[in-house]
Length: 350
Image 1 (tube, rainbow, N blue to C red):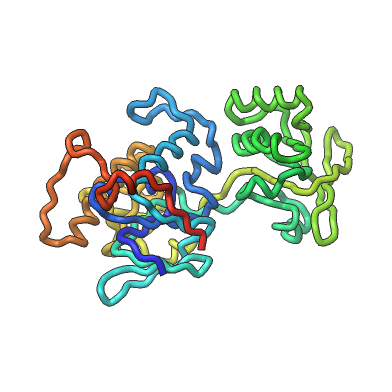
Image 2: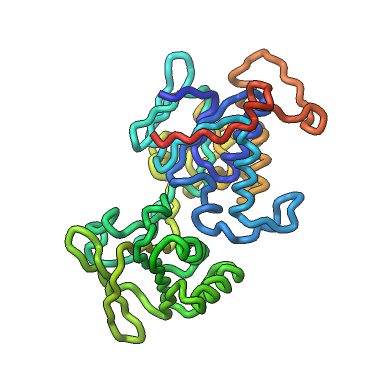
């Protein structure tokens, strides 16, 4: 069992910034996320999409923002349990919480901070017969380890940022990359579209549009797919099909926690510290709701800051905390040493 101060559910921008604000108060964090890497929607859906409303950045790519947030919190050594959902929680006799994940991992903490964005994400699956049969046997909805595609033939289906970005990246990994989209126009960032066109001209990516994958072929593993283009069907040999049609947000197991929910969002007390109806459980970012709520990243940062102050006061009753500006006090790791600040983020998948 892992032990920490704050159990953070979700590793999107609000969850990552919670780690920073907690670190300033010498509080440790353990993050749980259903996705295989930190960053939430920014990493999974549109890593190359420019964001224009982050203070101090006229424009910053979503992926770059996530990398900066990870660099910012590295000094506080957060732990991560990735590719697993927070399934249930229990309250201990001493007022702490134990959260159990879908992989059976347990994390004990003094408070729970739900920063799960729009909730847990399930991949939008194409309507193909027997697709479940080939899942993890040739059909992959996430690129968890690019090396598994080394020198393999892969087909990516989709027209958004994820499909474009992974086609570009895997062009130098796989032996053959084919991108299939049902329209001639792509929805991704212009520079990504231009890069795909350039790689197509260089013969590094095959692009088939407008077309759709209509069938899967194989015995124990996927060996080829059926494609329909201009009313005609053809067969394409492949080792992997990666459908990247986006993710469907759901509250998932959190909906069964007894939280006060309104229109798929968790109601919080925004007049104080964004605590839910359950003492010791808080919610920040897109997953919460209150009068005047705005679903903006910068609002999530603000909420995380006030939430952590509230958590500190709750777990340290009677202890006076004097707010110090980082421009004056600086930022140290939670043990106060610069040596620790140079250590990488600790990841725990188990």
